[in-house]
Length: 168
Image 1 (cartoon, one colour):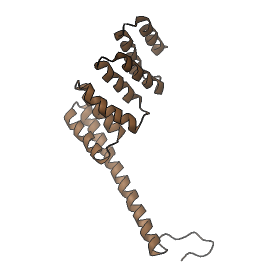
Image 2 (tube, helix red, strand yellow):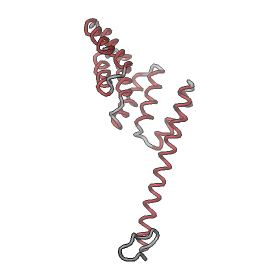
Image 3 (spheres, rainbow, N blue to C red):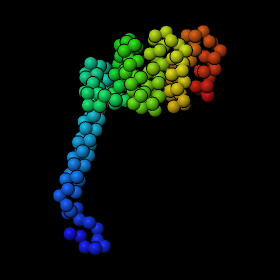
Image 4 (cartoon, rainbow, N blue to C red):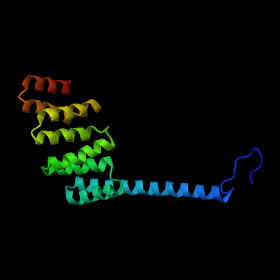
């Protein structure tokens, strides 16, 4: 037992307190292990992705989602794969779920803009590109995509201004 005025010694106290501390430790340990496994799977998936092994990458991302269905990055990455496969309607679902989980990624808004653009919705696409730029003013891909969306809307002067602002 600790002496008055001294720091408590870990491992002492009532059984109820010990049990409670043990439960918290196990919860913390399980959460930490789960996060580590998730990051390992994402890293593995990105490796496959970068080597153009898209089906293997998707399996890793889906494994992450089986553990955490609202994992924003895994949702975005699957959406990006679907977009690259020319399946913008399928990609929209994953990208919108990613936004609901975390709305701070300009990459997701850019990908949403690309989806809308592929679906012929240039006005909606421009809105998403603008949101991506709002989050990261140096995101040159979003600036280019926004300018191209304006060109698709036959708005040549605004497109020229858009491209000028990007380089300015």
